[in-house]
Image (tube, rainbow, N blue to C red; front, top):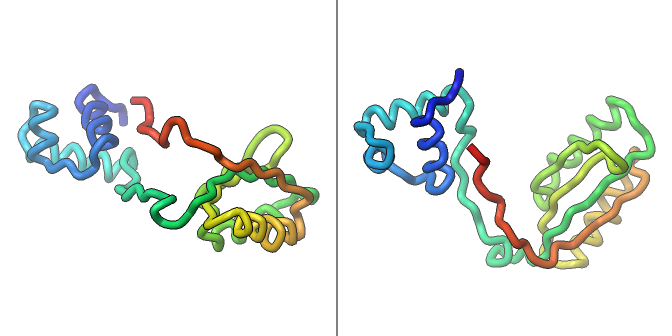
Length: 152
């Protein structure tokens, strides 16, 4: 399915405020509330909208250290990748994991309470994994641009 201009405007509006009612969407899109609601439902059903989430303030939640961790595997293979993926899924402080081209095999985005917590994650969780050969961490000093909406 292709997106028309109204779909794009609807998605842009929802990325800014996912709480918009069908009435409010309709007003912004020059549609009736029922038309706006049906478009939203169609975009949800077709997978353009994956879900709706609350964005929490990590510092208010006591997560004072944000970091990126590059993980380099010493041993490759499907069983090692699957084992590493299972480990990633069990750790709440690891909020995103990407497989990468280049030197590192994985890039992890982590939020920890403090530096000792980050140190424990690296030394007690990541490095002991059988396939991991080394890690390289970078601590975020400041985030100049928040995770933003997708360009539509």
